[in-house]
Image (cartoon, rainbow over all chains, first blue to last red; front, side, top):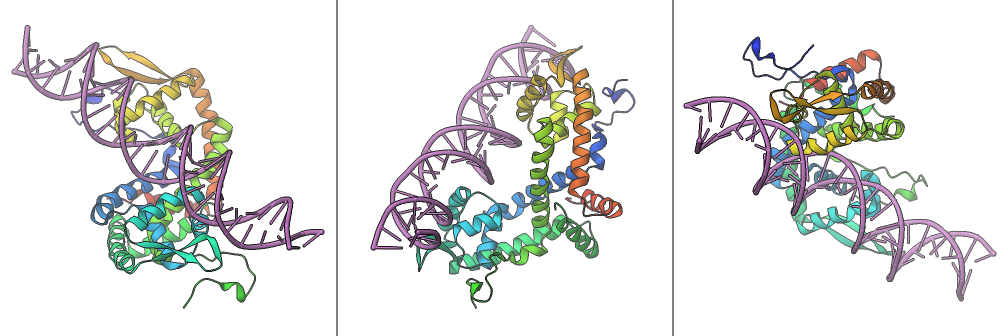
Length: 156
Length: 156
DNA sequence: ACTGATTGTTTGCTAGGTAAACAATCTTGT
DNA sequence: ACAAGATTGTTTACCTAGCAAACAATCAGT
């Protein structure tokens, strides 16, 4: 039984690809949705504000936990300490944050938003909010809430 | 108002990191859930069957659309044609699929499962199903269905 | 038979992450 | 007080997964 060469029936150029049992897998749909969200983010927020989802997340954590150290940030974002370095470099190069000295510890840096960083984040937040709403435009407000609620309960 | 140095109140070592407005963003929770799913997949399926989520997806599409070409696979998976090459190489090296000749087109390959590939996929599917259920163990069957249904409607 | 499109591949690039080693610095046990 | 050990940020090397462009081989249409 051949699945290809369906063009004898109709000249519909659509592929009609089957995904088998994956349509019942949560992980599959999770990945699909996430990739789609990422792409849309890139085409809107990244385009306009030159910030990636990762950088945005870091920025929010810094903004909401002023003075935290790089190690704390790494732990909060669940990435390696060494991964943080280039991220912080980028944000500092953009003038959004600073590495401030920590009074009683000359090893670590205290991460803080700059004035410009706060202004930029406000603008970025706007763009992100718009994108986020756009992305879930097919859902009602209630459904959106349900979805977030369910996502929160995943993964132990 | 300082957010840090809470250790004067109690010696709870917990970080208590705030994520600000991100807790209301769908994209944030989507990413979190997906990363968690990926990690759990790596610790179970990849561990036991030496297959990544990406490879598994490819394998399913090949299994369910036998004879499709690399370009068709690329389009189905929404990745570049050139990205497919190493994936197909890996799957072929593992003996799971073969690049078969296409009768009237010497340019393209017809991708098909090997006998061993079919056996392996059956085992892998089992592991994936278990992982997928495990990952959503906190949800009822109904909730799981609702979640998948909502995810399907996202993204344009 | 030419022209143009398609297919698979290679090469070079990027983003994001890990792991190990390291110097500087802090902390702790005795 | 101080040696031993732990932490912090950094660098380096490595890995995966993706894109983009160039390319030879091959096919399709006129």
